[in-house]
Amino acid sequence: EHPKMGKVKGVIAPENLSMNCALDACPPKCPLPGHAWQSVCHKEETTWLAFYRDTINGEFKYIFLSAGSSLKGQSDREKFEKARELGKVVGNIRKKITSGLRSSTSVTMQQNTALWFIDLLAIRAGNEKDTAEEADTVGCCSLRVEHITLGRDEEGPTIMFNFLGKDSIEYKNTLKLRPDDEDKALELEDNPQISFVRHGEEENFAQVFKNMERLVRKSDNGKAKKPTDDVFDELTTSTLNQYLKELMPGLTAKVFRTFNASFTLDQELYKLEDHPRKKEFMKTDTTQLKFYNDANYQVAILCNHSRAVSKTFDTQMEKMDGKKDEIVKELNAAKKSLKEKGADKEKIKKKITQLEERIHKHETQKEIKQKLAGVALGTSKLNYLDPRITVAWCKKFGDFALSKVFNKTLQTKFKWAIDEADENF
DNA sequence: GTGGGGGACTCAGAAACGTACGG
DNA sequence: GCCGTACGTTTCTGAGTCCCCCA
Image (cartoon, rainbow, N blue to C red; front, side, top):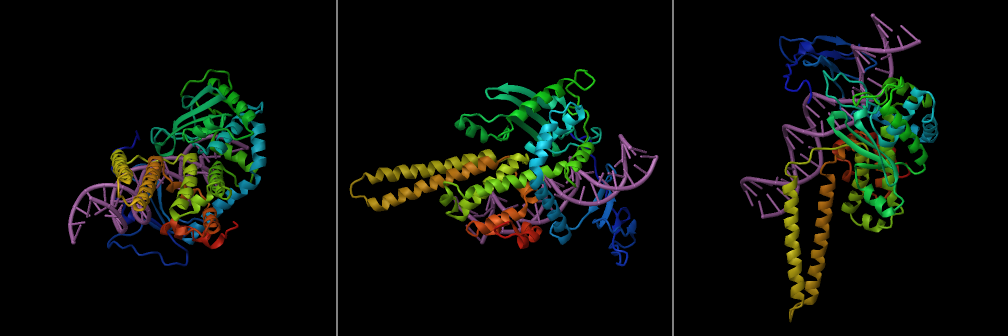
C-alpha cells in the first residue's frame, strides 16, 4: 500500500507555475484575469516549458513538449544510438563482467554479479527509496535477501526472484540452465516465469550462484544476513553507473534494458527469413502481424510489462468457447449430412473445409487472447524498441504496411525513424 | 573528495475516450 | 437504427533513472 494513498491534491493556479522561454521570446500571457505566473525564466539547457510543485510531496512537475515533437524525436534517436553503440562492444563488456564475477574484491564481485543480472534479465538499476514517502519497490541494487530463493533442480542450480518492481508490478522469475531434453526445454520456454542462462554461460552461472550463496548469507563483515538486508550491500546505482562509464562512455544500467529489448525484437523478427513456416506467416496481413506481435511479446516478457487482466476476461473466454461449440455442432451436422443419400457432396465438402478453417481461426484468436491477457505490448513498442528495426522489417518482408504495427501516434513519434531506415537497416 | 538531495528527464499502467462490430 | 460489448487510442500523472551541484 502506498503511504500517500487517499491524499487530495490541491488546485494548481498560475501563481504556482514557472514559465521557461527564450530570452528574446515574448512570455505567454496568463489566460486567467487577475492572476500572474509565479515567474518567467530563460533556461537554455533544459527542455521544459513550465513547472510547478506537487501539492502532496513537493516534488517538481514539468510541462514538456509532446512525444511527436522533433526535439523529443532527437533525444529518442540518441537513446537508440547509445544502445546500438553498446551492441558493438557488448561482447567485450560481457567478458569484463564475467571475469569480475570471480574477483576477490567484494565490491567488484557485487558490481559484476548485479550487472550479469541486469544484462541477462533486463532488471532495472534499483535506486534507494524512502519507504515512508514511497511504495516499497526494488530493482537490482536494492534487492533484499527475502527477494531471492536459491535452489537446485535436475539441470543444476536455480535462482528465483520474487519482488515488487516499478509501479509495484510483481517480478517473479526463476533463472536456470536449459535442459538437454529439447521437448522439455521448449515446454519451459513458453513459461514466462522461467528464464534460461545464455548458451555458453553455464560456468559463469555457477559462479553467479556461488556469489549469491555468499551474498544472501553473509555480509562482508562476516555477520549473518537478515531477510530484510540488502543482497548487494556495497552497491548503489551511482557507483554501478560510474563503473559502467569506465567500460563505455555514456553507458548506464538503463542502456542494457534498451539494447536487450531491441536486440530481442531484431532476433525474433529475422527468424522469419529462414523459418520453415515462412510461407504460412507471409500468407496474409493478419498472420504477418501475428508474427510481429509474437516477437513483441518476447520483449514484453523480458521487460516484465504486465497489465491487469480484464474483469470480463472469464466471461469473454466462456463466450468464445460457446461460439466454438456452435461451429463444431455445425461441422458435425455437415459431416453427418455428407453420408445422406442424394446429398450435394461437393457443396458439403466445401462447407466442411470452411467450418474447419473457422474453428482453426477461432482457436488461434483464443490462444492470442489468453497469451496477452496479462501482458502489455505497448510499453516496449513505445519506449524500448528501436523503431528503425520495425521499419526495416516491414520494408523487407513483403512490403508490410507500417500502419499495421504503428498507429497514427507512433507514426508521428517515430517520423525520424521512418525517414531514416531502409530495408537494410 | 564524497555523499546526498535537487533537478530533469524517461518510462509506466490505468482510466478515459472513441469507434467498430454484431445481434 | 439501437444498444451493448470489445478493443484500440489518447490522456493522465505517478514512478522510475541518472546527472550534477553543493555542503
